[in-house]
Image (cartoon, rainbow, N blue to C red; front, top):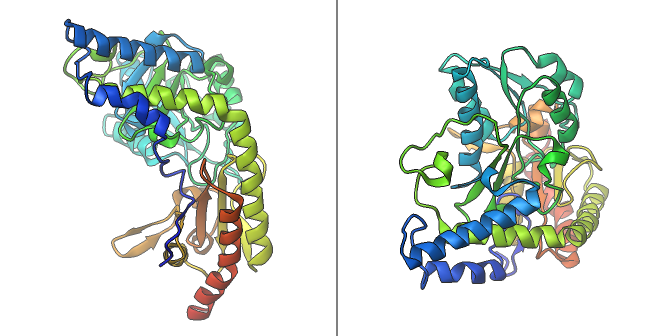
Length: 388
């Protein structure tokens, strides 16, 4: 076991930035007020929420009233999909929802949930790079389509969707578009008008903010049925006492992420390409999953023939290298990633793929050490379990 840790799993979560922590600390201790209280400590908390909402709205190019703070990305996705679909049907706008085959499970399972209540769900296919084809969306839209949900950038292979074009198609037909932009913050522009989106999901822990807090942007006029009932918080769209420290942290983290985005993206892209070229060039029968260019700057999803991804991850961990896989163990059997199989990969290739996701602390030496470790590690696995 190595004493040095190389953390290349930023797509799963990012460490809390110390400046973000500093912004949160007063609201974890000496400023404990509930924003709904009318006394001075309550007013301090409410001012903090107002400032955070304003900061986020400035980055997204929307009004503060269009920002709903939530408990994270999954809640925001559920609120968007269930909330809009159910409200649309209540208004007689239809019971058809469109999404894609490579969405996060928070989106896919929310859509599947709606099927219990008579909704019909269409999952758009993707090409070998993981891209949704605009013509497929255009063909799938129907008079009874209530909502379309397509992610901005994929969490496994980093593919960036043509969201603005997809949004324009939706708007031609008067259908709202939701995008899960969880992986995009700090990497891609978030202006909601330029992207032609009506709803957008973000979560703080993907851009060096705290876990357990996120937001949903919901364009004014888009019908939305609350999914948590209780008090009148968040303009009656999401009940529950607001997580003031978390929301302050989210706003601080998003502001920092947007300010440093150009230099951050350039640096990560260079390190990402160094990893891809080094790994594919040094390990026989290896490949990159997804499009080389139209991908997040920090994402390298690599496949290694005859090397099961779970075993690769265990050996990497012994070397102090933290990465992840799109596959998961279920009932003792290895299940292939739904994203990779939707892109046309065989089960064998899908279960031989590893995601490396870089971040703020990643150094050139980290990349070089990973590239140096991979050939021996993969060869060892292939010797233990030769290809049949």
